[in-house]
Structure formats: C-alpha cells, structure tokens
Amino acid sequence: MNLRLVTLAGTKVDEEVYEVILPTEDGEIGVFPDHEPLVTLAKTGVIQVRKAKTDPDDRMELFAISGGVIEIDGQQVKVLVDEADHAPDIVEAESQKALERALKMRDEATNQVELEKAHQLVDRHMVRLKVADLQRHRRRR
Image 1 (cartoon, rainbow, N blue to C red):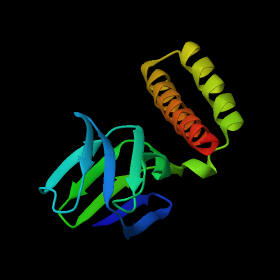
Image 2 (image 1 turned 135 degrees about the horizontal axis):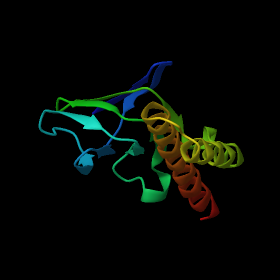
Image 3 (image 1 turned 60 degrees about the vertical axis):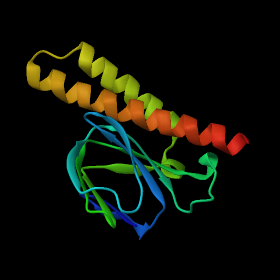
Image 4 (image 1 turned 90 degrees about the horizontal axis):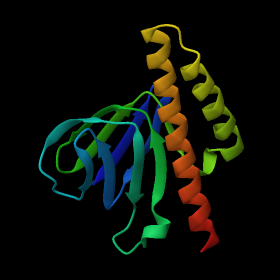
C-alpha cells in the first residue's frame, strides 16, 4: 500500500509500505493493505512505518507529527499534518531546550490563547523527544 505523509512544507513520504501505525483521537491504529476505508483525526504523536513484512520492529521508521487528518482507502494511507519530523532529523538537545521554553511559556501564560499555544508546543516537543529517544535506543541494538 502507498503511504503519503504531507505537511505544510510539502510531501515527506510517498512510498510503498507494508504497515503504518498511526496516532488517532481514539488511540493507535495499525493499517495494513486492504484496510477498510476510514477518515479520522490524527493526534500529536508518533507514526511508525514498516516498509517490508519481514522488517523487525527496530527497523520501523519513526515520525513525530502534529495533529491532522488521516484518510485510508485500502491501497493508500494519506496523512495530512502541519508538521512531521523524521526521527534521524530530530536533534534531541534542541528539542529539550524548546520543551523547556514551551513549559516556561505555559507557566507564564496570561490568557487562554497563550496557554493553548504553549500546550501545543509542549505536546509537539514531548513527541519529538519521545521519537528521538526511541531512535537512540534502536541504534544501540
């Protein structure tokens, strides 16, 4: 099946894959070829991609995403998000500093708009750190 991961900056992934695990508002779902058609919301989280049926879990590609929309039609999975970061591109130290700034922003928010923006940044950087941590553990094996 084809996976298309599209961000505001352009297409991040457009390739044939065996399995995709997606973070949805109702929990993680695994998608394989011939999956039932589905349109759902993606939540901020981790996308895991297994390119071949025989690939072990530690070879799955990881992406940190912001929320968005998922469309599945059986032979194609489209994920439309504002941002997606491929695990090898995440610099853990930078994400940690960004998380600290977002936490400070949250603590100093003076209105609901500032608070909501801070929460979104906290979620984004926490997911980036989670993906970086998973990637680091997989490299050690």
